[in-house]
Image 1 (cartoon, one colour):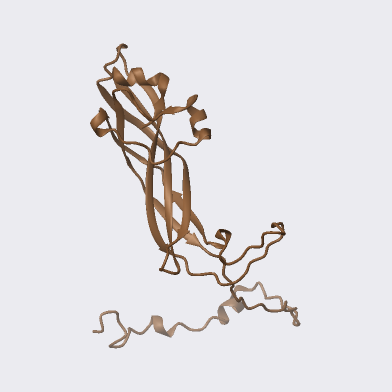
Image 2 (cartoon, one colour):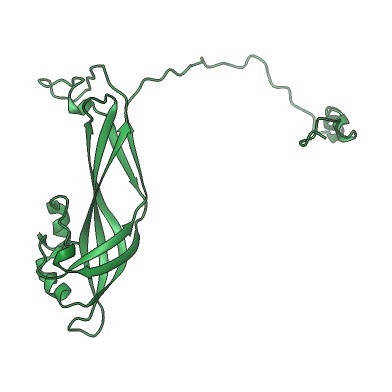
Length: 222
């Protein structure tokens, strides 16, 4: 995990840690075509988690709650077909048309993330120190009061998070849907009588209710 430098002394003096809750801040995605394998694309996902933990064994008698950032990276390969047409949209740049080879013509990647599960947390020193996969964006650092320290002095916190995701890539395609003209009714609806006897006479006699099914008509074939 990554924490502001001001919180590092509290982590260094702790002897135990307990995870409280985890939430997803954002997910950065990068989609690129795979060379020599047309129609397939790699989706690189970087997850940023807000993790709340409680530290024990410090100068204070009770647990000390702190929050930090956990970073996780995952890559998947999905099939997204190919686009072989030129696409021109209103509001685009006049001097830079959208060509088939332009990255803007790639399909769009979508990542759906369920609420993560906080599984465990433990204190670890330099041997289990894990460097982040990328630099934490400035907008996320501001949530914690400044730059996050990527190199803890002594202790760091290693968290295990359960995550369920659905990754999709979508491309705009053409679909033909039959359309029919609006039909104006030519006949006038005849009002029905409120007499219940006349309504009952229009109902067919239920012969099948009085005769058992024949052989072969049942579900078991007996």
